[in-house]
Length: 425
Picture (cartoon, rainbow, N blue to C red):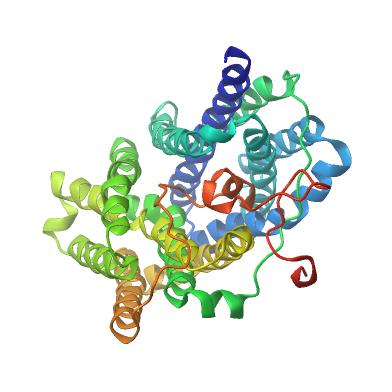
């Protein structure tokens, strides 16, 4: 038992350091960008670079990892990430930051892929869903903790960028010192987007629109906080309150979705999140404890949307297709996340900070209409009943930890096929 727990603890420690650094960097760039005079449109485009890099890295990382091995790949990506973080403090221009954010996204998705593929191998088969839950909890807690590090030094200096680089290097220590057997990365086929939409239209549209809203939050939430006059502590509290809300409310909302048609839950959650977003636009909603309570509620509702979409999709697919479908759903969510900050940044430049919660309300209100409309138009029976799993959008590799994505193994292959061989791209 100790032999199993020790490598998992090392991997989770690496994740915690990595997410603390990533969470700090996103908030730091928003604060520093405002100090440097970057407008909201510029910051939105800069922040979109991260999600574009994350998207590109999803394709590039498996090949590099297979070629040079997990440990060397982790060291490579950690060095790339630390270097790009430090260069933010050297080249303080929008074009440089956009390129550096893209490289940071590529580096982080590589790091996540290494860690998650090792988790897949180290997690005992009967405990895979528990390991996934712990992994996601560590993600959320580390992201929330990283927000508070922004107050340790002035945002106008280089110290906080150095702290992020140190955290990335610390994340590498338990992983690169490991003697774990390096796993093979299985191919990650994707279900054609047209087939994905036919299988579960509400899930496909939900992943895209949730990506728009959450990409806008991750990219510009701290910018919104600076625009309404919050100090560094207030920014950290607002961001961490949203993340803690997401951690606290995903499970009860997920339990609700397990009890009936998930499209009903999806529509109600999106409608409530849109209403909370509209309340953020009011003067009362931007003052005192009300502001933080609203963002806590928004996080609790909005963070649950993507997991509901995943569960709804898996409800209506046979086990052999679930891994490829989940990978395609991540693709849609990533596209939305890349567009969200850029689009919201344009709106904030033209209409002020209130445009960000209006952007949330518009995206999630549209999703509520789509999910509710699909529920009224068509009744559905479950093809393969699944259970809600609280999660953040991560790499396709993490989806293998879900028991629903396990397909029957072939004797000549240690990993299950997500699609029959003739259907693979």
